[in-house]
Amino acid sequence: MKHRVLVYFCLLSSCASPQDTRDANRFDGDWQAVMRGTEAVQLIEGLRFDCAPFTEPFFLRVQGGVASGFLQADENYSFTVPIDRHGRFRAQMPTNSVYTYKNADIKHESAIVLSLQGRLSAARLSSQDSVGLFVVGDTALDGKGCSTAVQFVSV
Image 1 (cartoon, one colour):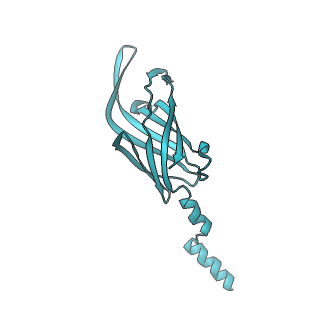
Image 2 (cartoon, one colour):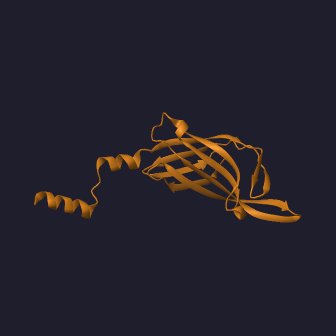
Image 3 (tube, rainbow, N blue to C red):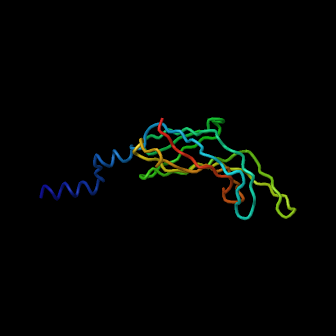
């Protein structure tokens, strides 16, 4: 009877094991997103984008399953997003910038959005597993745009 009461109590109260607590915090710490190179010309949905190299790093602080970060060049571009138990996250930062392009002699304008997505590795020594993508995107193309590969490094 004693064991049935304990099991029933754990089911009602969602007993957390020490492993659950460790999993929630295993990505905690400071990270830097290092840009790994941008293709100069990228084709997105039939449109040609001339992409400037993006080299400014992002900095992330992860605490309790939440990532907060900012772009080094301009802290106005910041975010706070959850990280799943596998270390994955996605952040979008709207800008006040507008992108203008011509397609078939029609001029288009749309807002630019920055996005950073990735997967952090709990094994900080194997940083080659901590990878992602940074995109300077066009809202008219659902955020698609010039993309840059990212390596996340624990600092």
